[in-house]
Image 1 (cartoon, rainbow, N blue to C red):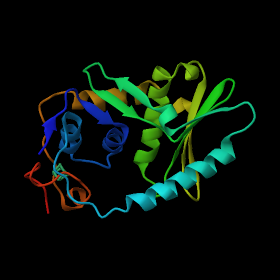
Image 2: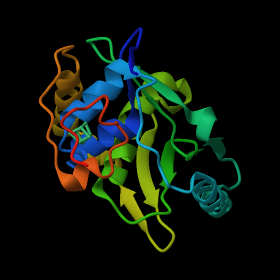
Image 3: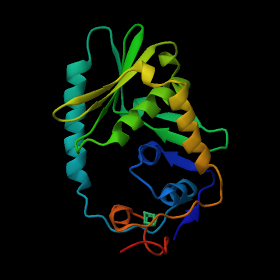
Length: 204
Ligand code: SF4
């Protein structure tokens, strides 16, 4: 059964899916932000195989993009924490950050199909990473989502006032300890790990 977190915690993937509209049930993200150790639906996802495939793509990308004089941060080295005004701790870590003399590129690797949330997640990294990594301050920071067969580049200009306003809007919407309504649907509940014992609206 779920227990309340000592302080609200938000994983970057939950936020990117909410911002991109992949997740319409805001309650699911709100619940995970304020609770841990909740009852989960058993998953048949092959995590070990996914990890091997993902690790390989990260290694291949690193070989392709690193070069003389560049500093590379990989996964846990690039972990960030962002504290929202309302006290939510947002965290995550991109796969690679390649730092040059006056610019840097954030790479995130995806072995699955293309989703808009992938680019949104990289944009969150582009905004939040310089706030917790002083070595990125003042550098022109762009991003890229790397898929097996193609790459989506995100220019530094994508992080503008409008985008920051959208980012703050979604964080702000999660800051209320009062739960938003659930949005149950067969297609979304099928991919949600929150068990019926926690969410009575779950569509089985
Ligand atoms: S099971 Fe369905 S209704 Fe419940 S939190 Fe998940 S997506 Fe929302």
